[in-house]
Structures are given as C-alpha cells and as structure tokens.
Amino acid sequence: MSHPANEPVIVAFNETGRAPLPEAGILGNFCAGARLIATSDPSALPVALAQKPVAVITNTMNAQVLQQISDLARKANQDCVLILLVDKVHAEFTKALEGKENNLVDHIVAVRPAVEGDLASSSTPATPSRSTWSSWSSTDLRATVQKIVRRDFFGAQKYLRAGATIAQFPITSSKDREPLHNETYHFAMECGLSQSIANSARQIVQEMLLNAIYDAPNAAGRHEVKERSGRPVDLAPSDHGRMQLGYDGEILAVSVWDPFGLFKRDTFFNYARKALFRANSEEIIDTKIEGAGLGLMTVYLRSHGLVCNVDQGHGTEVIALIDTGTKVRDFEKIPRSIHYFKADSQISTNRSSHS
View 1 (spheres, rainbow, N blue to C red):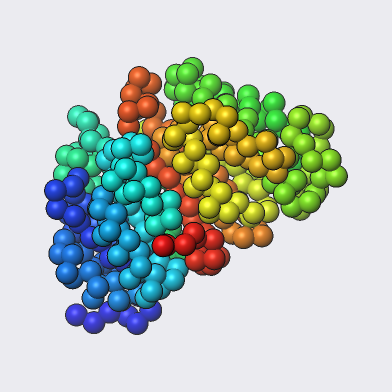
View 2: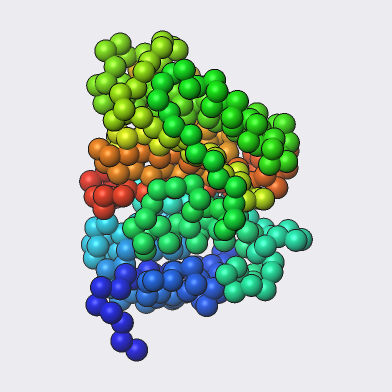
C-alpha cells in the first residue's frame, strides 16, 4: 500500500505484559491523518523508527527500551515526541524508568480503568473496547495525537467533547482577578458541579492569573517593578491574555493564555516533578520573582491533567483538566497526565540531554 510522501508517521510500540495500548483499529482512529506503524516486537523498532515519525506512543516501563526508542526516533527526526502511557502514579513508574522520563518523554497519558457507564466501555468506534481504557484516557490520547498531527495546539476545547459549554474572558488588568475568580466559581456551580470542585477551579485560576498578569510580563521585561504581591497593574493591549472555561459533562477545563511564549520545557517538567515528589516543602518553593513554579505546582496538585502549549515568543497556554467523576478520596492514588507542546517545531532546542 502506497502512502503520500508528506504523510506524518506515528509509531506505536506495545510492550506485552503492560496495560495495553488500544487495539490497532481504534488507535488508527486516534491517529487519523497519519500513517500508523504498530508493533509489539522490539526487534522491529529500528526499521519503524527510521521512518521519521512525528510521535512514538508506548507503554514501556523499561528505561533501556525507552532510551533506545528516544535515540532512534530523534536520530531520524529530531522533533519527534514521545508519548508514554502510564497506569501508575509518578512516584511508582519513575523508579522503573530510573528517573529519566522528564528527559525522554514529552507527554504522559494517564491510563485509568473504565468504570460502569464510562464512555470507553461503549461500542462506538472512537473509543477503545478494552476495559482498561477509560473515557479520560481515550480523550487524552486522541487529543494529544491529533494536536501533533494537525499542528494545531491551542484551545481547551480540544480536550472536551462536541457540544461542551465554553466561556472565554479577556485578561487586561489586575482588576480582573477577583471578577474572574468569581466567574470561575459560578461557572462550575452552574454546570452542576460540587462546591469543592468549584473551589478547586477557582484556586487554579488564582494561580494562573498571577502568572499572566505578573510573572510572564515580568519575565518579558514589561513591569518596572518585578513582583507578584498584588500591586495594581494595567496590561498594555498587546500584553492582554485570556481565560477559557469549558465543561462537557465529565471534564472541567480551565485555561489561561498569555502572549509571551516564554515557558521552557525543562522548567515545566522540573516543576511538575517537584510537585509529585513534594516530601520537602522547602525544595518546591521558587522565590524567583519571574518564576511561576509554586503556582504551577498548585495548579497541578489540584488537577488530573496539566497541559502547556508554547509558541515561543508568541504565546503560552496552560490548561488544567479536572475529571469531575473522580472521587476526592482517590485523588492522590490515580495517575495523572502531563503534556508539553512546542508549537514552533523547535522541540529539540529545549530538551535535556538524552545521556
């Protein structure tokens, strides 16, 4: 079978004995617009990875295999991204990967068990039929792959089903903070969500707005006084941001965009890692004025998925995803998703050494 010369390639490697990838036909639907090469044979990886894939999807927990995949894939295409599917919390799977996941992977998709009534249990062709795949996992992986294939990264709606309720608000001044905090709370309550979820969403927005109004402009040299203490600030029109809220009956999405595009990949993953290993509270606090580290960790610890979209010098969007069907008592026990998308294709310039 012939394929268009410019058709992107995605390689999927299923390590047997692990929580499996979706079946090939369903995974193919997720990879629409690309040529999928799926294998569970390690010896077939060199040939597959030589096809210059734009992304590799794998569930391997073998550090050596993941390193081999990374080296071969990025030798063929330096901008190839790795998508790791995990069914364990970070503190567990990082041991198997020898702590190398931050350097080797760009996307961590949480694979969660489907529950009765979950969309992933249905027979519709857009969702996996295997009981190990929940609606969250299906939506997350599909959105991740399609963003890469289409080179279309921004917008919280990509993580929501069609027909989702979406609201958008401008960020022009520090005076917007309290009204937007309240808008977020009321949006969640009007969607029929619990007060605890509404409060969590409000707290997420508090941190995101501090970044958009103070931290990001500080890093860009816009503010004469570099602080985030609540000093009144009016943003220049070219520095205005926007907040987006969305809910599709299952996922609550909260996003804030700023026009600076200064958030580096290594910074993002380092702060996420600190949040996941927060045994020493002193180590996770970043006192640098330009740093949004503590705020980012607060956002991550209150959400089930964290997405960062960056177009260098042009825009940063941070999206927090809350699975409203997850019980609060299970929050610390479930795997969570982490994503970093570099919209200008210069992914390799901000990736740590693979050695």
